[in-house]
Length: 270
Length: 310
Image (cartoon, rainbow over all chains, first blue to last red; front, side):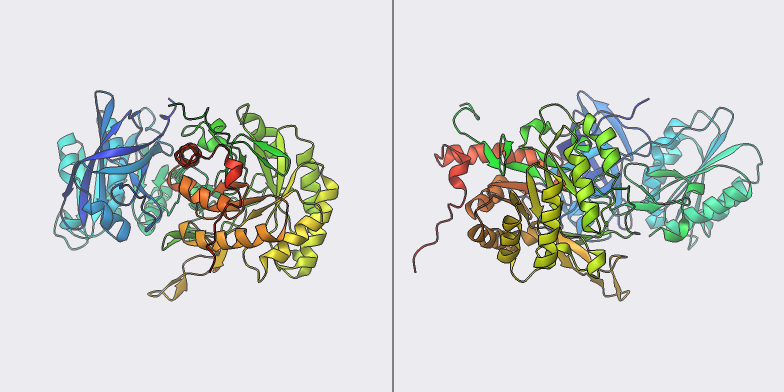
């Protein structure tokens, strides 16, 4: 199925609430929302729209579409994000009723597992926001979701994943929730089952790289969803280049954000 | 009230007839088709496609972009599909009725001339824009546009290779922009585009490293607009060929400022990243401006800057 054609529009903020730690949940009403596929993202302007366009900070921020539901001709689109700098700080200040510029949905989508294949979804930190929809769409199959973060406070969306009823395991570095340690250790355990398994990973680059290694050691396919700085999100600024093993670069926004882990040159990733 | 009937937005940019003076800048608009989901390109005067070389070219390693106050830095290094793929694959995908200006660059003059020749044989190309801000290999890597003698030989060679309307896009990284403009006019260019990005450096104080892998990048966006206005104004006073103003345009009012300083047309650049429909908004807003100010023709604004007597 072709991915939906993107919009450029002003969305209306319905909710923008704290989710623990520096994490927040933004709920937007987007008129004409075309739907989205798992793993796609939006470019979100940093802060509310006013009469005079904001020029500082200048660039929109790429944000995974966490989930969305259609109501009338609009979508209620959820974004889970972490306040890390000025742009996300301004996003955190937007109030219900205010308007915020969005472009999307953008990027390709995750290929679903093959029939008979088990899916293991591994996500760390804000990477969790990129895999909820995939978990939802694969929950009727054999799927395990492994979530990791520094502390329990940093974990986003765990209750939503619990509500999906999928097999769920959690790791925190300080042991404040789930097992103590890295989420990649949970992946090693999960891949103890030698049946055909497709690994999906999204999170910090070292985490994804380790997931790729673990999957490769067991000859299982691994798809990673990259994050990168980008100015446009639709293949024009060429800012989000990811180096390929063969030669040259792919664009995270247009050719990804998901890639076969074996196609990437991990040394060169920012 | 009808938005379009009342005013005349047409301009002639060095032999390129434009339905309105709002173009988009090379390197910020891909090959045009990327914007089709967001914008009817026929609302624009036209667009300048991404700079082309003889062969496809990969860009720099990441990080390639960074933010600065009201601006961004980029060091992409002119990644492109190559001139032949542009003609074979990209041009045919552009809708009818859209004016396409092709941008070109190479690392030596012979290369520029060859790209210009191939583009001139392509029916859809309304005009050429020579990107003169690239390092010239044979003169030790200095930008073509930074040395008047090198710039003159470049414009002369491309002029010989093509009978299409020829614009030269100038670097702002020069001491005397008026001199560079006169060189272009003297060698037969039909117009001048300015400014390209301002050479810049940003640093991460925590890591003590440059934010871009390439160390240096080009600064673009609203922060450079007053610099661009100054250079357009200086160039317009130096030459009689038309000027296409570029630099930080986000609104119709910004476009008007460039026209007042002597630009015949403008190019919207970095703002296309933030809002892929912005160039259409600028074009519509220009009509509204003309109506609001009772100006019958957009050409009446060109060079109409009023400097009070002291």
